[in-house]
Length: 314
Ligand SMILES: Nc1ncnc2c1ncn2[C@@H]1O[C@H](COP(=O)(O)OP(=O)(O)OP(=O)(O)O)[C@@H](O)[C@H]1O
Ligand SMILES: [Mg+2]
Image 1 (spheres, rainbow, N blue to C red):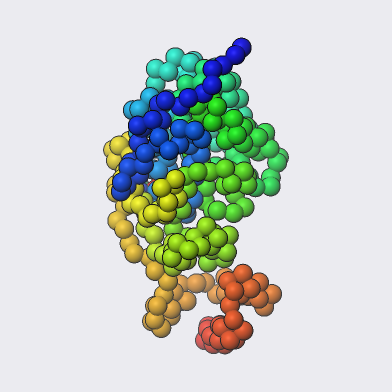
Image 2 (cartoon, rainbow, N blue to C red):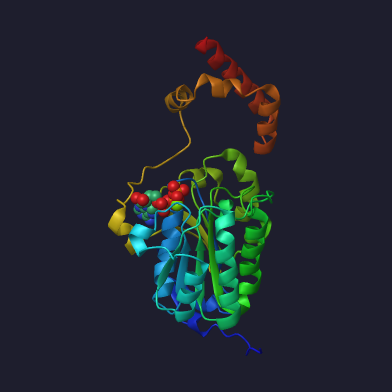
């Protein structure tokens, strides 16, 4: 079978409204979309994917949302029964948002193969939203079907461009969760709140010269992301997806900041159980200090404060 040169005409003039100025997808018409959202639990990653799925399905795409947690059927209707059912839906293109229930990599594989086959054959705009991507595309793990699922998703990313297949993946963390190609190939990144200072070393290069620091990421609330797109870097406050609006309350934004004065530090310390502090042995502290790039004076001051705290607890 021969195919004409792919032209993503549906991209021309299409937009994504992720908060703020809508993103013009014309700029993605030669590459397709390979989007990624990273953030802790409950900070709006699923919402981001659903928002895109809803908006794209109104502009000529069929959206497929992979639902590992069984939370989407109540929003968009019953999941497809099996892989053949999925093939039907994607071929007929009669369902704007198709729910696929797969709780792990093994369950995902037959669906993933059908997605590849249909995309190959029809080359009609398809948006695939893979929520909790770490379940299907680990950084290292290859067993329990993860290797095969990971290869399929890598093919979505690599071959998608010529098959009108656009991709969105969510993950809990930036490193150690997804396969590397996912990060290197992505052209729309949403970075949500970061709670772990040690994660900053992996992220810092992206933010170089942006003026954004760890404390800015740490202070992001639910639905807030730093968005890297063709347009540059900007902070966005995401609207709620229509589907979620019906079932989920809008989260109240609580400003999260690192403790800034003694009483805040004191309160934060008291909330940490003693066993967790005891796990901070010298080698662990040295490693964390090295990762965070602390000066010897800072390490010493920290060790003193830590010693005081542990003494006060006995
Ligand atoms: N843009 C937003 N504005 C306001 N509230 C939001 C927004 N996005 C999400 N929320 C709230 O946060 C809750 C969690 O959102 P969501 O399920 O998208 O997070 P998640 O990052 O996917 O979490 P999990 O890791 O638990 O799946 C939603 O139920 C909603 O109440
Ligand atoms: Mg979620």
